[in-house]
Image (cartoon, rainbow, N blue to C red; front, side, top):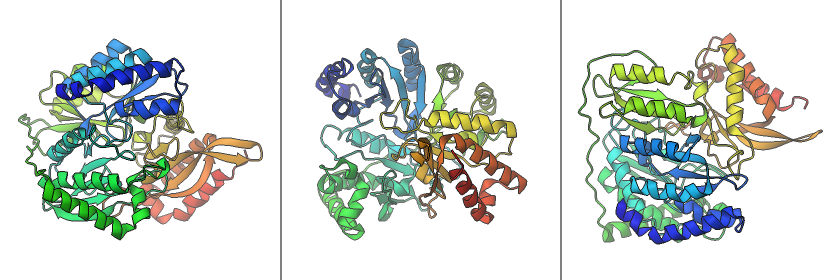
Length: 514
């Protein structure tokens, strides 16, 4: 990584200069974004502060990385950390002079921020419990690491039309959305991958195209090379609204897209040497203790547990992070795995260690509903329409007094705009930032989606039902919880028999007098 940082030294000089220009109001937001995004940094709304996204392949935070993050919090007085749906950590409210220093310090500590934004391959994702999940088809950790190393090596060599998201999934639950990413590798029982490409959420979402079945895992880099080459050849460099891989399904057609992909794959197979041998994820630690707690998940390693910790809205305060750091530091072989739902797992814990971490994080989400997802929102995001974080916290505060049973309400996903950073399109219930036209003028609102699913074999995008004003969303959720509670069913069971009732409830709140 030190060599990589040296390679980008000249780029860093240019970034420092343009960052200074922007925060001195000598450059537009759009012009700055075109450069800063490549370094994993964007200006926040208002142009006074910035953010930095740490590229953490597979969402892994080792103890070395954990110490670096803790040092940064203290040194730069970072008050807001956000865990993203792409398994990264974002530092927010950064002073302009600190941003470039943080980029260089991250590089020096083995965390490459390049490609955290801009027109580059993004953070490579994987199922967060890879290597420890007793239900996984096989461990995908090594393949995610190899993919990350490969695309980082390409960052200076290719200029994509737009971002490219690559992920690996180890079970049919497909929490990384392998079947509808730009490129997804979905594990099979027989130790092979099926490969999906040109999918994605956001405007005009599309399921991925199944371009290969039952490929040997050591061949994955050839498919990444083929995907990049197809995008370089057929991606739209002129219209940024259409510069994502999924739009190639429109311009080429699905069959011609498959043909183009296989042509590039054959070229790679004939000209590249990309076959890989990876080391499986191994754990030497042993324990024979037990713990019964829904947040303590038994690993396939006997006596060890993964502890689930889900900060509300994916935002974790520095005090909590510091407490976690101090607790984890002496625990052997533990590490943090970020999850695509803005949560985290601490893996390889003994029962005693798991109990300690659960007690330390009592303020974390306690129910399925409280693990809901919210993007960073319009207080920070330049593109955001609605304040997703505040809405989620308002909903949780409104619902807690009713003490609904866990599962009476599902996890909801809130995106402040159509970009789907909150993955609302893949949610059982999702909300997207919008505006509602009323006789009293336009009001802050969100569009309601229902029926999304990421499970392999059942994957589907949610359907937009209606638009509800922001102030009525907590009321809508409370009445929904009352209906499922009265029926003595969880939401998943209730909706199967009461879909029409649900639609009527949504229509009621969409049409309430304003």
